[in-house]
Image (cartoon, rainbow over all chains, first blue to last red; front, side):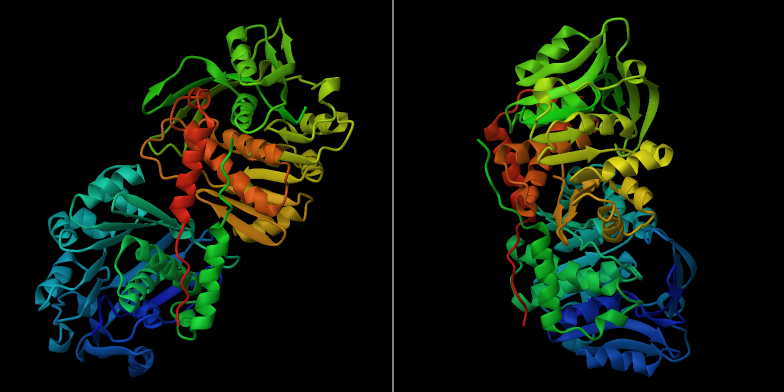
Length: 308
Length: 308
C-alpha cells in the first residue's frame, strides 16, 4: 500500500440547525480515506466495525479505491456510534451519545500487505492503538501523520507523548495545542510541541484556517469564507486526509510541498462542510477540486509592494 | 490636507497579564494618525481634548507630521479617559472605567483648510459626530473610511445606517458584522452590509486576520502569528490607519490596491500589539515595515499546483 489509514469507522447521527440525519457512515477513516482518494491510489484502511455495519457503506469505500482488507468485521458486536448536535454558530457542538462498542477493546491488526506502506495516517484513537499500529510496520513509513484530541491529552498524557515522539506530523486544533503545551501563544505552543519530537505541526483553527510550523518556518492557510456551512462533522479528518493524500501522490515531504498539501486539505474540508456527513466527498473530480484550490490562491494573493 | 483623521484623542490606562500603565496617550486618532504617518504626508486630526492633556502628547503627534490644527483644547474640561483590563487570552477585555468628559457634548469643527481633504477616515465615535464631519466637507472626499462599534449598532441604529450609507469603506469586527446584519455567516453578512451603501467592507477578526469584500470579490489577510502579544489596545485603529494611509499615499482605491493596503494595515497592527499603547508605533521606519510586509507575503505564499 502507498497510504495506510487507521481510524474509526462508525455510525454518526448528526443534528444541525439545517436538519438531522439518521445513522450515516462516520468515523475518522472514511473522511480521511475519501479525501485522500482524490489524490492517491493504493490506500488501505485498518479499523473495526460490528456486524450491524451495512455492506453498502463498505462498498462505498471500495468504489473510491479504498482497500478494506484491514477492516475487521466483528459479527457479534456493534459498530462505534456517535451522535452530536451543532449550535447555530456551527463552532460549538454537544455530544448527545457516544458508544464505543467494537472500539472499546480493539487491538488493531495491520495486514501483512499493509506493513510496508510508505505513508501512514493515524486518525484520532487511543495513543495505545496508534502505537500498536506503528510497531507492526515492517519498515518505518516515509511519513507518519498523527491526529489526536483533548480527551487523550487529559487522560493518557504519557502514552500520548510517546506516540507524538514517534511521528513526523502532528495535526491538532488550536485549543488542543494550547492544552498540550500549556501555552496560550500558538507560536510558542508550536515550539514546545515540536520539541516533543514531530518535525511538523499543523494547528487547525476551523473557519479561521490552519497554521503549519516546522523547519523554523510558518505557513498560514486560510479557510474559504463559505456562505453555507451545513455540517462541520469530519472537516478536520477530511483536511488531514487531503493533506496526506496529496503528499503521498507527489512523493515530496518538504515544507514547501506541505504548504500545497495543506491547501489541498483545506479545499477538501471546504467541500466536506457543505453537505451532511461524507455526502459531498463522494462525487468530486479533479476539475472541481482544482477550481477550488484556485479560489484559495485568489483569496490570499496580493501585490507585494514596498513602501519608501 | 491629503488625509483627514477624525477620532477620539484620550487617556488610556491599560492592564494586561504583562503589566499595567498609568494614563498614556490613547483614543482612535493617535493610533490611526501614527500608523498612517508612515505612508502619507499631509494628515490632519479633528478631535477635542481637555486642559489636562499634556503638551508632550500633542508634540508627539506633530513630530510624526500630524497636523493638530483641528484638535480643540478645551481648557476647562477633562480629556476622554478609558481604562481596561485584558484576560490571559488577550481576546477578551473588561472596561474598568469610561469617562467621556470632553467628548460628551463634542460638536466637531473641521478647519477650513481640511475641508477639501482627499481621504477621510472616521474613527469610532457617535454616528451623529461622523455625519457632522462629512457634512462639513466642501468637496466629497475621494474615499471615506468608517469605523464603528456594537454600542452604536445597538443604541443609534438609524443614524448609524445613515452614516454607513454615506461612506465607501466600512471596517468593523466579526461580531459587529454579525450584529449589524443579523446573519452569522460572514459572506452573507457582507452581502447585506454592502447593500446598505458602502462599496467595500472590511471584517476584522483580530488574531485571525481580516476579510475584504467588494466588487463581488473577497480577499483574506492573515494576522502574523506573534509569539508575544503584549497589548491589543488600538490594534483595530492602527490597522485602519495603515490601510487608509497606504491608499492615500498610492492614490489608487481599486480592490486590487486595497488588498495591499490591508496587508500594510495588518503589518502596522502587528507592531502595535508588541508593546503597550502607541509605544511601538513611534520609532518605525520603512525598512522595518517593508520587512514585516514581506513576512506576510511569505506566510501565505504557496505553489499553486493542479492535480490530475
